[in-house]
Length: 437
Ligand SMILES: *[C@@H]1O[C@H](CO)[C@@H](O)[C@H](O)[C@H]1NC(C)=O
Ligand SMILES: *[C@@H]1O[C@H](CO)[C@@H](O)[C@H](O)[C@H]1NC(C)=O
Ligand SMILES: *[C@@H]1O[C@H](CO)[C@@H](O)[C@H](O)[C@H]1NC(C)=O
Ligand SMILES: *[C@@H]1O[C@H](CO)[C@@H](O)[C@H](O)[C@H]1NC(C)=O
Ligand SMILES: *[C@@H]1O[C@H](CO)[C@@H](O)[C@H](O)[C@H]1NC(C)=O
Ligand SMILES: *[C@@H]1O[C@H](CO)[C@@H](O)[C@H](O)[C@H]1NC(C)=O
Ligand SMILES: *[C@@H]1O[C@H](CO)[C@@H](O)[C@H](O)[C@H]1NC(C)=O
Ligand SMILES: *[C@@H]1O[C@H](CO)[C@@H](O)[C@H](O)[C@H]1NC(C)=O
Ligand SMILES: *[C@@H]1O[C@H](CO)[C@@H](O)[C@H](O)[C@H]1NC(C)=O
Ligand SMILES: *[C@@H]1O[C@H](CO)[C@@H](O)[C@H](O)[C@H]1NC(C)=O
Ligand SMILES: *[C@@H]1O[C@H](CO)[C@@H](O)[C@H](O)[C@H]1NC(C)=O
Image 1 (spheres, helix red, strand yellow):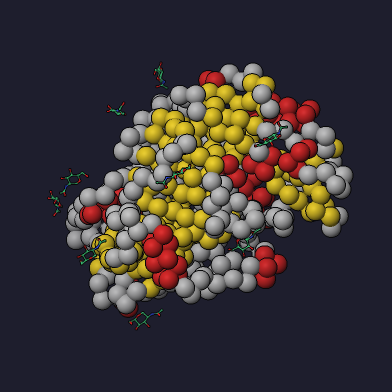
Image 2 (image 1 turned 90 degrees about the horizontal axis):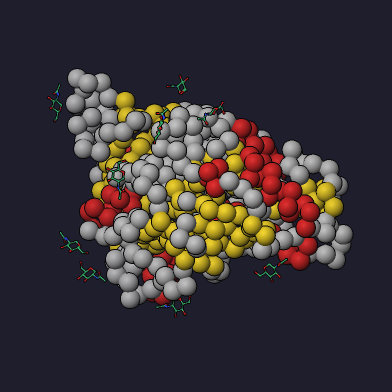
């Protein structure tokens, strides 16, 4: 195991978590690894050159499915803090690496000419920039394009023929500004047929904040998401699933258009909220003790000006939990562990284990119970991150942070599970699975 705490990353996360109030635009995504040159050295990786071959091999294993589409994922929550996939756009095809994010909606990529796009934070080199004029099939969308709607769109009322501009801003004050375009997206259907769909996406020419990838692909609930566009064009079902690999290997898979194997899966209803994947959390228990938390803490308030409720979000690295619940949970874990609380690291409470003891046996299990009675069983590695202290890797820091009114379950909880977003039947399901294979 070599999952060290990334201090810069955590710091960014904590800062982001502090900004509780605001518009319900949760696009959490990845938050900055500024100046983390060590990280760059450590991650001297490149995207697999055998990407297509990988896709085809993957398809062979699932040959009986004909409709769905798979995207292999790379990355991990533990030291990269994100999962990404590679997509192909335009003709000839241009390959771009994008973050996979269920907390936001649109696909946008860095687009030339863009001065601010090639920043020094190339965590996942080499960065690419989509060149609109190098693609024979690209076109700039006008304000009369049927998909040119939404709060991020900037169109003057008289301007049907002008370009459909957008400004997408994120909670950590980063932003992507550009114009919507259409071009072919290449993918391989389960069963092996390579095909394309004409996709509406953002061409970003001004970016603020650090974006160590080529763009971001949102899987939110609106019609502009890539899965929804493809589902409409191919008459596929509006479902998708992901399996995010844990700290040993990372990686994973994202699939859409087809339901996964639901044997042994448990489900909870998706709330009727149009912006995010909201669910109803009923209780939290530690080992088998139910914490005395008022379930109202987790309820979604429709007309609140603040963010409320419980959200499943693959674009958030850790967890935000309502302040009272988080304090109670931490106290209970602290009272049950055999590890000693020691110096804080970057504001996080950290436990220290004597050598020979393992995290699995020294900390309690946590169970989340959702509406319908479905449970999600969590192990210590779903709430602790390993940290280095005085050059020793014996620190275990509590990674869930507090937020007023809002709970978000991110990658640290979703990893090592097959998570199924069954939008058609308005439910979300999960089961334990080894995702790194
Ligand atoms: C995280 O992912 C990156 C990129 O795939 C990889 O280089 C790194 O070794 C991974 N770290 C862990 C702890 O798995
Ligand atoms: C984009 O493509 C056009 C046409 O192929 C080319 O002239 C131009 O130099 C490219 N721009 C960049 C930044 O690569
Ligand atoms: C813009 O398009 C809409 C719908 O196509 C139409 O109703 C409207 O009159 C147009 N406005 C202008 C200024 O052309
Ligand atoms: C693949 O495409 C070919 C030609 O378009 C078609 O005949 C065939 O049925 C397709 N196969 C699958 C598995 O969709
Ligand atoms: C880029 O966006 C920032 C903030 O959104 C703005 O201040 C700046 O002027 C923009 N730069 C260009 C070249 O448009
Ligand atoms: C789309 O799929 C549904 C069932 O999956 C089918 O009933 C319907 O006829 C299809 N529509 C088209 C236009 O193929
Ligand atoms: C579905 O998964 C279960 C285990 O969860 C397995 O036993 C079964 O064979 C799988 N079914 C298919 C069709 O792959
Ligand atoms: C969901 O909410 C919308 C309005 O917020 C309402 O029109 C719709 O009927 C609701 N659907 C269900 C299934 O409750
Ligand atoms: C919010 O809705 C509740 C009922 O659902 C109502 O009692 C309350 O006054 C509303 N608050 C605001 C600020 O609109
Ligand atoms: C919304 O958040 C602000 C600041 O965090 C807080 O003062 C206010 O009481 C909250 N409002 C509600 C209705 O929870
Ligand atoms: C936590 O769960 C694992 C199995 O998932 C089990 O082996 C372990 O004994 C449990 N720990 C406690 C303290 O109950």
